Figure 1 (tube, rainbow, N blue to C red):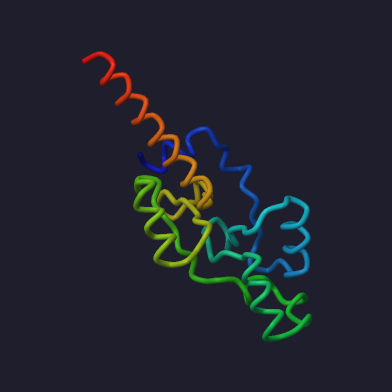
Figure 2: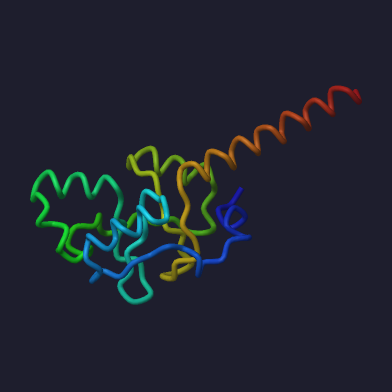
Length: 143
């Protein structure tokens, strides 16, 4: 299954993002308020990077609380690893596994059209496996 099917019902304007100039303190408040672990960081309309809970931990460990006043563009993970909406769920899962990441912006050209987590992909794959198993059961019963 392509990622485009996975994000088909989602409104891209509902993706929680921030600008590269947003102070880290504000981004942390946004993550906490929305109860999310990461968000895409934009420069204009393009994905410049990702800021996650891991980024916060690493930056506080190396720079202390001073990093909270810095722009998120200075402390985010960049460049962002992205996936095309035409990639398959399995390819995206493989990419996340190899790169040890949990979130991917989905792009169409240079425009972000979705944001997926490893949980989204695992759920999609489990649903697909359940559907295939049901089809096999039905086939076996009719033979």
